Length: 334
Image (cartoon, rainbow, N blue to C red):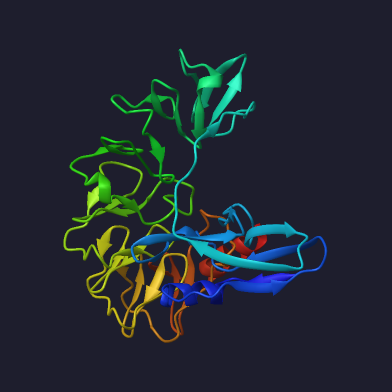
């Protein structure tokens, strides 16, 4: 059975203060496929808090490796999907015994981190004294980002917020270092902190300013953002507040807020223009513009679109034969 999550998710984004659970029947041991745009639902927000899709007490997040999102197998008579306002990734005792890229694992009674080019030993760390989540970890005396010790981090208060951010009682940490001058008591992440290629990236804010981390380099402070109304739109690329649209941490300055809509694969449009990330696609026909890359295409697949006059790869016009060749390659990969 297939259950389309897209409409329900859009209703939540449009009216997050009055959310009805999504309910549907299920026969014994039936496999359910929940599909739609595989944005992580923990980025939906209400009253400044993140909303997480839940099945009873189990948090559900879309698996970007699955063709259509998240696969569930339950044997209840009825499924009810609802939301919560709590978001935090729990550090768990280490159990992996096989290397997985960018995660910790056990070998010969020691803790290792599987890096890009080699496996690194965490010297002096006992497995029984170590817990982790993805590439964040800690023992009773030291905190880690991968194989790197976070100097000065406090293990007792250290917690992981998402893929891109962690914090303790004194600082906020990212995969690029600490964020200076953060208001710790008010700091909150606005999405799951992982982009469509699996890299750490995402929006966060405190009561004074909004932050964007793209996984490389210093965290950017978004000047002029309306903090109280600012929210991520779920894919770690796009965000909005009461006055503006943001793409990849920058204002989409020409976008008309009331008519702007996010399409897919970094494309968006308003009543007059079409955009790719934070760039306007000059000459694109807004009304006939169509995104042609399948929703379930591989994360690093070409972004293809067309309108009644032109063919596009990312934000560039290309000739129709080349465009058709790229589209055919995408379809074959599925």
